[in-house]
Length: 478
Image (cartoon, rainbow, N blue to C red):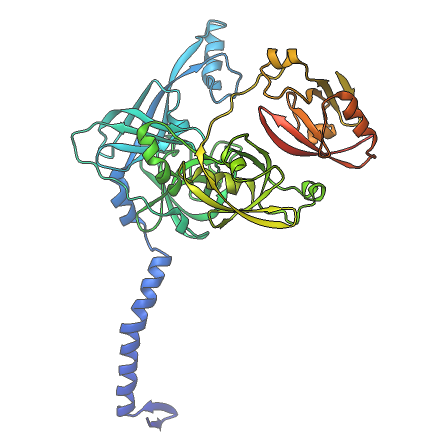
């Protein structure tokens, strides 16, 4: 290609201009659309089409709840402060003992038969549930199934009109930073949409043993609970559940239940009862103190603090002090990981596990059974000031009167505020059964063991709480 200089300017020859034109056209028609498509997928210019498509699938929920008027001010289950002040001002002490109020929430249709997913805390203890569709038609709904541990609920409406189900996505494919859209009914403003990103995954916020929330900064406000969290493919990847806020309004920290958890539980919710698998073990996380006292080689995994007699773990040869490192081929980082994994496993399924016992890494197979919930035991003597604890030997009468599941050990009667026992997480009603790996049947044996430790030493207790055991570490003071 030749260039010609004219009046200080450069010009391409005719042949050269034609070549450059062809190159530019090829680039424009081949590369630019690809870049544009990738950009559109990663950074949508508008969510309008997505919202239009899913709007018929999202419903507003109105529930009627009976509330108690004698609850303290500020209680979520009591009378609102403004209403309480009104009655106190104009009617004195003639306040109603109970009253009804409406609460608003959201849900979304999952099939043409009228099944709707929402949150359990939205519909529990209700007298009436109404569902309002996007066309403003209202229908009474019935509760089909609910699960307090995951905050999921399934309700149903009977209609003779076509319904538009929302497609359920795959929450495991979500990445931190992905776009998400939250649809809800905040403050009664139905079918409101907010946009944000996935801020984090697998959040545990202390709401239950199966916490596994998606965190998002897409605004979730009162009334949006139960609504869908959507990806940019018009799929529900979560169910909006909770927010973190000191004011009760959104501050950019919202949590959604992963849709994969809901999909797993849907067959059981349709049957009205949730059944979960169990290994017949009690587990806990490995703290630095426990790692040192037990001589463990790792701080990862789930530490077995008790094994149910005759249960599947015992049959598989698992013992107290073992650490489960892998379950069904997947690494276990914590007790929460194992708890969620076991709960997600079908009942009566044989699963491979890898455990660490001392310096040995062992493999075993264990068959899951149905989880049996423990009944709470009503909490019902010498004070040990260096531990901040008051203990009492267990007697046959105590076993009978309080239906204790363990006939020996030292019963914790009371604790001193800000004491080592409080810091160790002990509570009244716990039973200490081992002191530094040695069984303690009496106060005399316990005090003898205590004389052998020095100020600043760490004691390893094995504790029974409501029929299940766990390890606790306690620092000695004098």
